[in-house]
Amino acid sequence: MGRLINANDKVNDHQANESCAFFNLSPLHSGLHFSAGRSPIPAKLDAARRIDTPAGSPMSIFEYNGSALIAMVGKNCFAIASDRRLGVQLQTIATDFQKIYKVHDKLFLGLSGLATDAQTLYQRLVFRHKLYQLREERDMKPETFANLVSSILYEKRFGPYFCQPVIAGLGDEDKPFICTMDSIGAKYLAKDFVVAGTASESLYGACESMFKPDMEPEELFETISQALLSSVDRDCLSGWGGHVYVVTSTEIRERILKGRMD
Amino acid sequence: MECVFGLVGDGFAIVAADTSAVHSILVHKSNEDKIMVLDSHKLVAASGEPGDRVQFTEYIQKNVALYQFRNGIPLTTPAAANFTRGELATALRKNPYFVNILMAGYDKEIGPSLYFIDYIATLHKVDKGAFGYGSYFSLSIMDRHYHSGMSLEEAIGLVDKCIMEIRSRLVVAPPNFVIKIVDKDGAREYAWRESLKDVSATSA
Image (cartoon, rainbow over all chains, first blue to last red; front, side, top):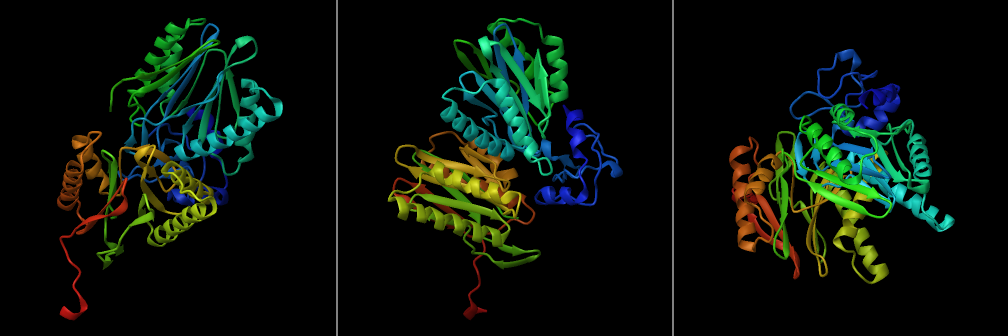
């Protein structure tokens, strides 16, 4: 997921200054940010979205709060899981922060990245969905909702929300639908799983090895939980437990995971 | 560096803040009250850029009062916290306020609550929270000794432990602190913890 985001970082200095001034960034640098996580960044490739940490080495704005999200497809069901940490760079503020929101009974939205933008974006999307419900007298289909999220994100193309959403729902005939997108709304549909967050590289690896098609809800829950916990254990910015929703056409099961609390 | 922290106890919420007004290396005054009484049952402890702190908290206070005048009932603590977050979020991409806020309140149906609001408008309901360099010490002390449903004596003891830790371990530790409490009887000042009294003009 890190590679998808990097393509957006190429903004001109002026825009970078505006959107980044409040994060105490140096406006002198621009360009593509190729390094993943917290490896040293060569000076001329510094992105405009670095943040200075108390420890010294700079961080990306997407890593300010820390997050990990997965959505997986099973047999007529889906599961969506997140970690529970809310941090401010290296400090943990809370261990019960919600990153997955229910839009309606068959549609869940997970928002990773900067927490303030996740909250703002969630409020805007719930507003739009409620209006849709009033006008159409029915719930939004997941595919439609994904398009809505994508256009709302692209509206802010030159001053984006620093979030990566993960959308999971049951569409027509309760067929599971998952997708993710980058911070400016480029949709990525998948048939098996999607991941987002600071731990995304680990999550990709864990999901790829643990995933099997057409899993029943119980097995899907086990798989997504193991993939989440093993990945966040390798990422210092996410973790402190997990929050898993397994949704079938008849029920929603919400479970809290206890993992390594560190 | 400004130290603000707070916690929720049994039927009350407590916030403490340092009282130094500092500009670079100069201490302008050491009895600056950074915890504003928002209304009868709400406290806002704010830290950050001094001008923004005063202006923004007063703005919130006046708007909360306006709501009460218009609608005849006061805002609940979650409503006030969400309003504050909304104002910070709207200003964020235009003209951001560099103010971190801990909002403590008591509602009859909900009981005591504490809200952590970052300067970039991250809102989260917490049992204990802190801002500033002092947070590295006070959060750890609270992690060790806090449990839900603490009595007032236990909570004040914990607040004092945090203040002692900040005083002994932070290099530019603020000398004085103010502690305010909010419970069913309202929001009020509880105590000052002073280790350095301001010298009055006559004795100088």
